Length: 403
Ligand code: PMP
Image (tube, rainbow, N blue to C red):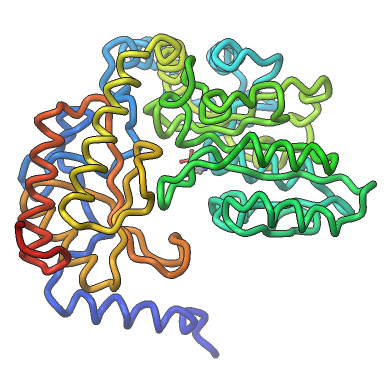
């Protein structure tokens, strides 16, 4: 009998070799206690969190927490059913109403995760004979949606308007086409040139979806996302998002103005064949979304933090994912795994947690230390983070000595 696990042997060996060097396992961190949106106990040490997606710090907002407690008391711990059958409570509707208000759209559909929202929309809206045209650096959930569905899949070079145009030009003009974009690409923290992308997609008669997982809360006057900031409202057919980042809980959604949108509730398998979110979760999400509509001050502070960290890391000599600060994600590009893990561990021992990302999650086989900032990080905390990046980076040899 062949062991079906043998396909993972190379990965098991590579991980073991790394752990044998004496480093901590970057993928088995436990938050023993969470003290605030920006602080947790890890290994008994109070640690500044610079590797969460808690951009707006909503996880500990008192109104959000109260809404969750009330819903837990009034509606119980879970729905035990699909949205389509017994799993739509008043709270799910209220959450969809909050999204419609937040985005100014006619329709909103809440999924159990953002992963499922992408999986569901991408696999369902484009069917046999249709085309999905996606950026090569698209999130795994978008790729998985392509794999689940029956459409032809065409990739274009990351953020290349020219390549998108070229590839669309080769497709049958009469075929159904969905162009898939993201406002912020989460690995390097770069934003898409949405107005140019949208113009090309429209020229070729495509529908457009944009994943604003990392743009919601932070970009645009109302915090809708990069598409709002760049003036593309009204041009995009579907906005996909998540509650697991700025909203501060868990869940996913699609919003749209398409008059036939509601039919998707009947035909989208990752919506139909899974249980709906617990009432406490949709209550926290709805409260958080409504508060994010009026979070201009938090947005401004998050920009200040992002700019300072980006500038400071550049000054120290780190190679970053973007030349200029483009989002709240600031990625440090490292040459090899050993160096990335050594720096990651040194930072953790000094009291700063960042995300370590490696292939296949990263583009072009890169090893990245990804910092993501929070509106609740104080200016002093950002200086502490930079100070540690200076000492740890020098100790590990990723950057040169102080000038
Ligand atoms: N899209 C993007 C761009 C993401 O980064 C993520 C999560 N990292 C998702 C979708 C999925 O979101 P969720 O955590 O809600 O499943």
